[in-house]
Amino acid sequence: MDLPKPGDMFDRTWEWAQLTRFVSDEQPGATLGVVSGRRRQGKTFLLEAMCEATGGFYYAATEAVPQAESLRQLGEAVGQHLGSPGTIRFADWGEAIDGLLSLGADRPVPVVLDEFPYLVRGARELPSVIQRALSPRRRERHESRARILLCGSSISFMGGLLMGTAPLRGRASLELIVPTFDFRAAREFWGLDNPRLAALVYFVLGGTPAYKTEFLRGAAPTRVEEFDDWVVDHVLNPASPLFREVRALLAEDPTLTDTGLYHTVLAAVAEGNHTRGAIASRIERKATDISHHLTVLADAGLLTVEPDAFRSNRSAYRITEPLVRFYHAIMRPYFAQFEQVRPGRTERLWAASQPRFRSAVAGPVFEHVCRTWAHDLAAEETLGGLAARVLSGVVHDGAARTQHEVDLVALDADGKLLSIGEVKWGDTLGLAHLERMEKIAALLEAGGRPPKVITLFSGAGFMPALKGAATRSGGRVQLVDLDRLYSGD
Image (cartoon, rainbow, N blue to C red):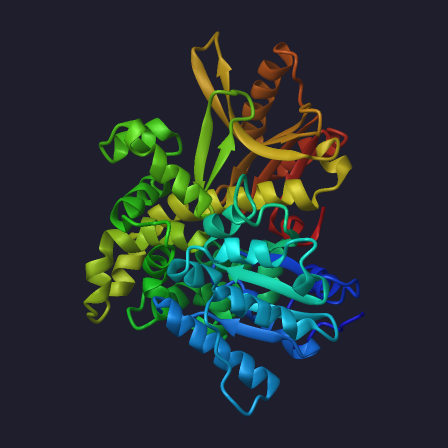
């Protein structure tokens, strides 16, 4: 079945195609799919649109509702879907799941249980009930073509449904993760022609679509000169839903039980502490005391753990969501002052935060943007091959007894070094930056890992002498500015 994507749905072409293939499968037997992703990414919009297009059934669970009430609400929803004149009641979850299977008796039909973690919180046995209902030789499954979709925003919980010894392990034929928009898609979604303005907005809000459509109702700066006023009016404003969004994100995740300490850990990372030891030292804890918290934050999709490209025993923790980074670097230190609205105060606080915004927000997020470009968008001839992994790393200089940080390291599928890169958001790069990278390249060559290409990224441009050196290098030195990041390869 070829279902045209709704006209009001931006992007999500691939996700729509995967759902279409899953729900239109004509083969007999009910099937199971799992849809997850961080909040505000449009999962509900995607699933509701699919149900509208196919006449499917959609049910969103309610938080903190007892099991009996959940069953009653689900029965009412099924009755409304079927146009039943009477009330449908389910005695237990086994009966309820069989009732959902019966919705697919005549044709393939999507059956969506959104906010699935809420249901399991009140009925721990529910995954096992679904497992039994989907037993391969069970008559109710064989006679149904219901395409059951379990959806939730707790990434750790939803991922755990299909892992290890979990009851639903091996039962699902679809596992769809709905991601945030990358920096290019975010620019198009916001309708920003100026790449510098697009980057600045991305540094604050990332690629979460609901921040534009629901939270800000499309309010966006149209010129770089309007960016500061936009931040003051729409992000640092205590009347804006964005103002407390990061607190809500942590409070909504059932795996984050001690939100105060989790905020403290994220704040330490936002300050530039990337190793476990550095984070522990910053919050005055032992490294072993925060191991669990780092793992939980990573499982929740708020932190990522990236191995060092050159040292196998070292890894770096990075915040995945730009707004989370912005909150901890800019908002949290002055939260009480931002809450107490005074004429001109927010403008002064934002102006005073500019150095920290450049170093703790713009710089790290720009590095992420450049690594995304190198991994997903750069041509093979740009990096000297197809990048399978793009990391950062530290190169040891034994003779000088020092270490050199490398912002971008591109590796091929065999782990061979393709390119090393320097990333600067606010600096105009010149020959001194190239000389530094050439020195690092020589150290790597002496160690048997010569890079094919040196890549220099800048949000402020390049000096003429560096442009000339890049031209004479025959492609060995690549310069990537904002125009190339957003439009080139």
